[in-house]
Structure formats: structure tokens, C-alpha cells
Image (cartoon, rainbow over all chains, first blue to last red):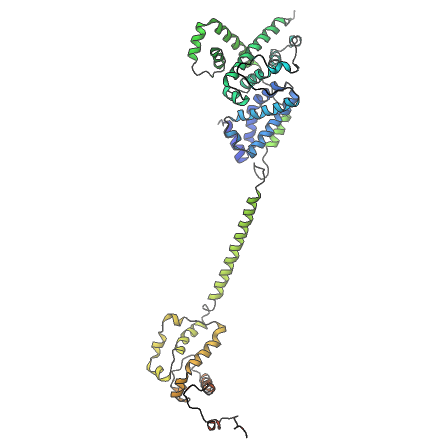
Length: 202
Length: 243
């Protein structure tokens, strides 16, 4: 019998069923951690934020039960908490600026004013694994595009949920996603053309 | 622009009416090329494996999610609730004490009536004694009629503390002044119907003496002749003044 997220959360809140909460964590750990990992691009920090996120979730479930039931899906509520934890970290590291979203801005991002700690093209050439290459390309995306990409592709939120979470319109979220995919396509094409062809054994 | 955004919607299965977009893709080669490129990127994204958190982090989360001993909520109850609970306990204790008090009073009240040796006799004899006006009245009224007095009068049950007082009232009722003037002292006890409980000779003798002393001690009423002093000459213990 497959229980929904809301049923599991209710079992934990009402009866203190920690196994139900364990199922929730196991079910969504990859989505939440992938989002955090893509946002901060540091595994240790992502682990800390992941733990911080679920500790906040536990505290919120024990004290404010209705805070997630009135906001739709449980996963969206957890990801909102994860986003707040990530933004707190990024603000502390001065890697995030709060901007007023506009309908026309997509490519002219504030991201250009932030320090670029992502791997450069030369480093990308040496990445052996395609997945690592893809991760590196994602890491070079502007923050808003990357966030929408992570929330839709990895966390499996709808564009409406993403728009509500990030405080923008649905068209803005769709536009950011479109540009994210286009930029990824360009970066992948660039790195594939410059990457040396792996030599096979004689 | 809407068609381009619909490409993203359609790519992730959120387009309500994909037929229109598919028709547009069939007519617009540039749009179809963009859709193809986006679809390739998405396939690459779908093929990658998502990272997982460390096991130690998961263990720490599950340990924190363990229920507290008193239940899943660990927030303190408001002080007002504790006060209300304390008042409830006091109220229950007060009700219990009141119940015990009422029960004990009830037991004390009904304890004399439950003793078959004393109270029924008093109840039966109390009414005839009070209704005993005079010897001739007692003779004219049958004893059975006196016994069948109203139940309210029969059930008058004096407490042990009131028993001597009842006996005194009974004696006073039998020695009213108008009756004393019309009958002889010696003849009164013999003509009076004797109850069963005081039928013993010693009790009757004691009652006669008591009545005699009562008559002598009663002060003279208005309009009654004053007894001369010579009437008390034969009284033992009395001496004329001046002798």
C-alpha cells in the first residue's frame, strides 16, 4: 500500500510514527539533496544544509502542523525550507543577491557580478564522466536558471510551484528554464567539440 | 514567445493541449529544431544520477525525528491550561469531601431510627402522652383511637438528648392548672389509663409523687383563692414564721 506524502506526514504528526518520517526522507532525499547540491556546489555544505532542512522540517511539523497542509504538496513545502536554508548560506557567503524579478530579464543576470567559482572550459575538458561534465555545465548556469532547472528537473516541482516558491510568474519560470536548457546545450556542444577523443587500447 | 514557452511545458508534460503545439511544430521548422535541441538536453539530464546525502546525515535526521517520551509534540502546555487542570482537581476533591460529609450526616441522622429497641416505643407513646388531657377525657376516648393518631405525630422521634425534655413536657401537660383544680390528686393516677411502658408499680408511684410536687410548686393564678398558711401546717419540714 502506497501512502502519499501527506498521509505519511500526518502519521508522523498525529501518532509520532518515525518510520513514516523515515519513508518520507528516503523517498525525497535525492530530490532535496540534488537541489541543495546544485545550489551550493559543495557536497559538505550540501550535507549540512540537508540536515538543517530536515531539522527545520521536524521542528515545524511538531509545532506548526498546518503550515504545509495549506500550501499544497509536502515536497514543495520541504523544498521551500531547503531553499531558505540555501539562501541563508549563500547570503552569508555573499553569493546571492535579492533582486526584483522582471519579465524581460533572462540573460542579463546579476550572476555576472558574482565571483565565478565554477570550473572553466579548460577544466571541463578534463572531466571524464559525462555526468560530471553535465554537472559542471549546470554549475555555470546563472543562479535563477540553475534554480529553476534543479527544481523542475531534479526536485520534480511543477512550474506553478516553482513560480510560487521563487516569487515570479509562471512565464518567467518557463523562460528561465528554456534559457537554462539552451545554455546547457551550447556549453555541452562547446566542451564536446574541444574534448579530446578518448583513446582506445590497441 | 508563447510557442517557445509551450515547448518547455510540453517537454515536461505540463501542456494542457499539446495538439496545437504539435501542429505548430509541423509548420515551423525553426521551432521544431529548437524543440529537438531542448529534448536532447533533457534526455541528458534524465540520464544522470542524482547525488545522495551521507548516511551519517540521514541517521542524525532520523534520530532527531524519534518521538519524544511524551509524544510527538514537545512544546510546553500553556500555563493557563495547567491552572485550569489544577482547579479541576480542587473541584473534584471538594466534591468528594462534600459527598463524604453528606453521607456521614445521613448515616448519623438515620442511625437512631434504625435501632429497634428505643425509638419505636417512644414514637408510640409520645402521641398518647401529649394527647392525654384529663382523666375523664382519657376515659371517654378509647385507647385504640389514641393510638391511631396521624402518622406525622407518631413519627416524632426525639433524640436521646431530647428525651428528658420530652418527659418534662409530658408531665407539664398532665398537670395543667384547670385540671388540677377539678380533680383529686390521689385519684388522678388511678383513673388515668396507664400505658404499657410505665405500668410498673414503682414508675406509677414515682409519677404520683412527681405530680404532687408539681401541684404544690405551681404558683397561684389570677382569681384563685390563696391557700391559708394553716393548710401547710401539716406539711413536713415547714414551721410557722416567728416561732
